[in-house]
Image (tube, rainbow, N blue to C red):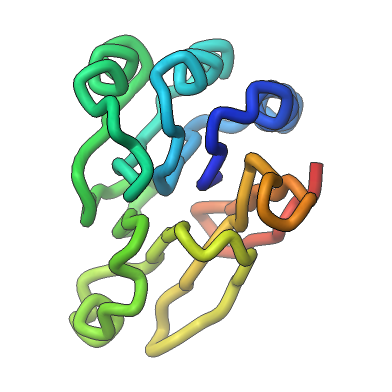
Length: 156
């Protein structure tokens, strides 16, 4: 998920969805805005990996929330999960060096508020769109199977 922008109702719907489908890891590509919104993710029952977005001003408060639910870092954040190499970013998605590097299987990004799933140079590029739904009027997220790298956009 990405760009939740303090929309508690939308975040709560995302948490219910991820819980209903038994997600083992939730990834957030930035722009929570405030720590109170990020606290909603504590109801997931699974860890969360995230990056700060360009609108996340209260970084210390967000870090404190993430001490309890997972990890939040400045972009780019690379990690491995289910034997796949991930790069998580908010605004640096246009950096073609990441795509050409051959270091990643999946790049997850946000910022544009436009859902996108595409392949480039053998890797999956995934933008879940905007969980908050403020800009487009549609709250969206993505569901990714890390074993098959099949993804779909879900509208809440």
